[in-house]
Figure 1: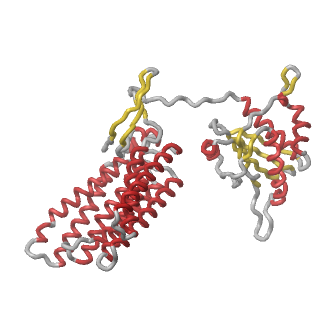
Figure 2 (figure 1 turned 60 degrees about the vertical axis):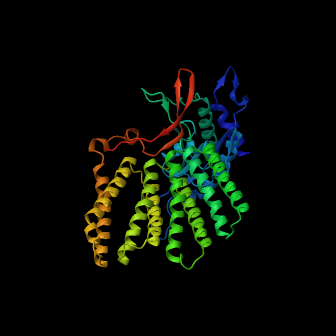
Figure 3 (figure 1 turned 90 degrees about the horizontal axis):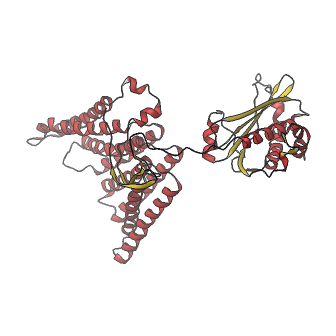
Length: 464
């Protein structure tokens, strides 16, 4: 009733007229919208006393109900699943509106010079701008002013010409540009292989040797992985970095589970239990990597860092076990498993919050490889003529130390120059192409009105 009164009262006097007819007769378009709870801007009071603005709490609750009714009267369809508080930084509203695909309405009130100051911010999904209305009114007039302000904002938004997204153009001098879900092929290959591994692991864990059980499980696992990857690639824009990050979460923990069980319980445990450990570790790693992608996107450098953490952890974990035992002849299964699992976990957690350049990660891995080989070659005389435990530990320590030193040298040698670091992030990102392989549809070729997919293998990058 109050929303209708607000529109019919002062609102009708301010409505624009065209040839004597009001715009109220037009049927408004139905638009999805999110109405956030009204914020109360207050000043904290002294200890033991209520802060300034606490008396606005019941008014804010009334405004929530009033603006919800008014928004629906204006043709907006409210999304009731998004009833959490609006972000404190208004700069995030534009990106949030684009991700939700809805119009965001953020009201706030505060006490000002004996009156109540009402502020309403409107953010639309297709516009990079925020529309703001601020008015002061007494408590008796606040309801009417709130409805009028919301009506003016929504009406002004609809009167703006619709902005069509600019067509995606290829960079100057090229005929191709990345297609949507560029990582779909890498995701499909890894998902199919991992699904087949799950089916085989289930068969081995059951202790059955019957091929009538093996082949159906392989087919169901591989087919389920392939279908899941296709659905995911169609629903979301899966980049190459995201696809390979998910692959790291599936493979490295699986290897770690197998190696740890074989090294710790291989002599006493059964083969089925080893495959069970691999299933549990692999599905856990895949779940963690999926949660990481849900938290933030993944760059190609971050995916490489996750794989690098698993590989370097595998090597360094094995060296650590040999260093403790003082025996280079025994195969360090448990140490390699612990190193692979912990190395992947640490690197994946770091990749979620950090965006390293892909060329620097590759340079670090190459430096670690060359350093390790050089250390092993330099320390090889220590292993001649029946080496003692001390000599074997010295060889392992020299090899591991050179591996770490090589990784550090490779990382710092590819540090960007000062002028490159000062460039904007997008420009620097565009000038440093990724180094992850892209298999399948790698782009789209366009000549005039004719278009055709580009199929092949792409693997490129720069070392600076």
